[in-house]
Image (cartoon, rainbow, N blue to C red):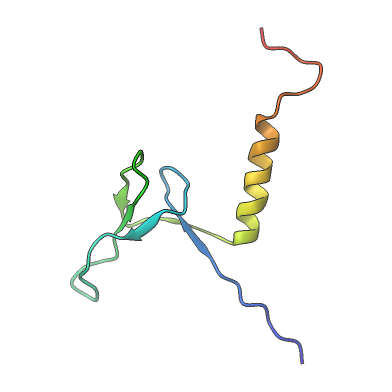
Length: 78
């Protein structure tokens, strides 16, 4: 029998796109809907929404961002 690979997910802040979210309150259950707070000092997001990504997708996205930032050969700005 084949074992299924356990897929984990990462919660990203919708404002800064970093995995720095924590629960915003200590109250759980029906009294308080889930709120999240970004721990990044420059962001300050507090809210109920977050982005869920597969860790493999996050690595691919980061690689694509780095590739897009790299200067193209033979082109100049201006």
